[in-house]
Amino acid sequence: MKAKILIISLLHVTISLSFFACSKMGDDLKTTTVSLSLPEIPYDYSSSNNSGSPVFNGVDNNIATLGRVLFYDTRLSVNNSVSCGSCHKQSIAFSDNVAFSPGFQDRPTLRNTLPIQNITNTGFFGFSNPSLFWDGRADFLPSMVLMPVMNHVEMGMSDMNAITEKVKNLEYYNDLFVKAYGSNEINIQKIADGLSAFVSSVSSANTRFDRSRMGLTSLSTMEEQGKNLFFNKYNCNSCHQTEQLNGYEMGGGFVNIGLESVYTDKGKQNVSNDPADNGKFKIPNLRNITLTGPYMHDGRFETLEQVLNHYSQGIAASQALDPRLKDATGQPLRMNITDHEKTAIIAFLGSLTDYAMITDPKFSNPFVVK
Amino acid sequence: MFRLIVVLAFTSFFVNDSYSQIDSAKEKRFNHYAGFQANLLIKQIINLNNNNTAINNPYLFTYAINHVKTGYGLHVGFGYDYNRVVTNNTQASRETKVDKLFYRIGVEKKYTLSKRFECGIGLDFTASREVDKTFSISVTNVGSGVDSAVTTVTEKTTSTGYGPQLSLGFHITEKIILGTEATFYFSAEKQNENVNIIDTFTDTFSNQKTVTSTNQNSGADTDNFDLAIPTALFLIVKF
Image (cartoon, rainbow over all chains, first blue to last red; front, side):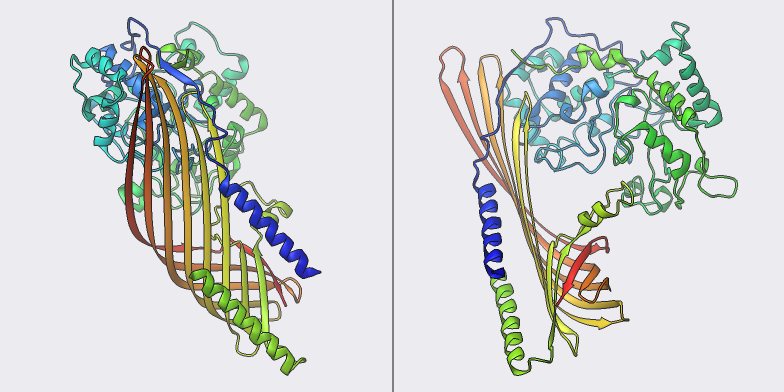
């Protein structure tokens, strides 16, 4: 009897596996024809507030328009299925709403998608290079924009020549390159510059917090309480410099915030090979923070409340833990943030949402269903 | 071939064991251990925290047979993972299927540490095969016509390896054991990727279709050491 049950179970498993293995691929896919839709007169990208961006330095709006098309073109991936915009979604401040975004083969990326906004091509007053990615492994925007395109998990293109060849074979780029550069010659430098121009033009400077600083509006009582806690009692501003558009004053920073005692992802140490950089990750810009969850480099926290719980009670002792997160005895700081304080801080963080940026048509996907 | 070796090894031990029972029905010569990876089950029962610790031990089912007196024996492991994802987006739709198979076979010696604990040390030989297949379609109006691209990316990864294994078991009862293990495998991996694109351009005015087909192959060989720390827990029945 037992043998019979075993044989029937094995047959069942075999048949189930065969069924999965034999079902024809593509049967469940829906196809829609999309068209490129661009305005007659290009949008104005020169109003970008990102100092150091190619646009700010006088690059034509047509270059940013070219960059916008490249940014949203799924044909830049090896199987035409993923674009930069697949992970960097405008409606959520060019971030993604999953811990790890799926790449062209649905494999998860290794880190959480960083939001794109107020990215500059230079660091402090143009004297240093920017630190890009969670671990700062890139410091030049035109190089950085091509790295996800050639990443084996993200967009899967084999090399720069393959990208150039693909763009050359797409008819609509001919006109875009002529408008942008005055000639239809396509090369990787122009592709990178176009992408950089668009990425660095994504600007967030129109939040209720910004308007309140200019005296154009006022924050609610709860938001004001949160602001005081943020700037004074808990001094969150010592890392997250929200008054700066790019979120930092001195070229950005990398800190270990005690997420783990032993980091599985070593962060900046992977780049610098310096043990003092163990577990250090880029301090994110808090603009639009209520939209950009899940949070941290690995998307471990679903909500801002969970983030505050970490700072309140959860900081782990770690060799490279930031001194600002240690108490007088050198132990991890216990901020003991009350529930009311957490609500107030989250209310204040809500005032950092830039609704104009996330709905601005000049940053939107130009491939539309007609 | 590898599967055949596993089956033969199993069979030979069962045959020996069955003869031994005929010769000496009272004296047990071999201990059998049948186990399955129980991390998810244990997580369901004891939900300690929300942290999702990655388990890099792929063997779902394990079986070991050890000589009662000497502790020497043979163990095998098998794992299978299937995943299908369908993503329908406006610009491009894709379907991904991932098939993963893992096998291992090894020799080991078990030691009884106390009434509750026993441990083992052994040498494993491993093999795995993974096939990732992604099928995607995108249709774009490019001005003078409609361009439809159907792309299939097939990636096959095979790996073989070997390395030491350490196991530790805790007897919940005489016959039920909660076990864990650490492995340190050296593996050689061979990867082949094939990208096949069928591009169909339909001219808007003449309705004429032009089909272009491209096929690219690439491959890579890598060697690596993989230390798997004991995050995998096995529920094992001893008989």
